[in-house]
Image (cartoon, rainbow, N blue to C red; front, side, top):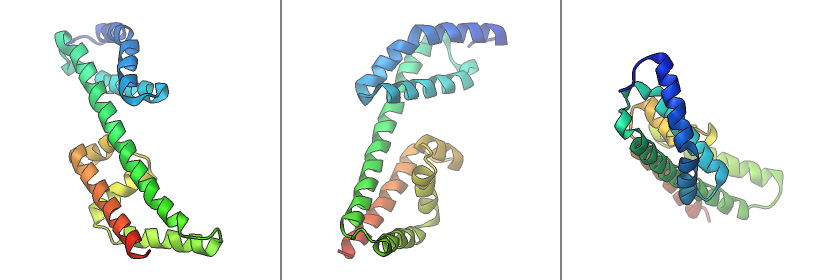
Length: 168
């Protein structure tokens, strides 16, 4: 464990300088996007700083690599779910003309389906898609796992998809 506030900052700075570029390259292998890779690595370092006092000096590098890998995988999963949501909305949009009234009906349909979702599922969908929160943030807020958040999102998207298919 690390001790002493001043030495913590210096030690952390050394760890950051030693690992930042390597971790960005590591994240890039998963994400294939430089900005996304940097965002993931920055998030991991932010979390590492918050938990710095509980990190063990001999395993900090392994911790960072593991955290980056998991963040990348979560990012990719979230991106996949977002893509499915966009596909659902696209199906709605393909079926309407460009007039305002049809568009309003589409929005009403989506809102109607969302309002019938179970409370927790509706809340999680809202936080992730409309408030752009990460799965991790929502899971921490609700005291559930990120896998549980994913299951709620997938459930909501399945219900939306089924509702769309019924009306075609």
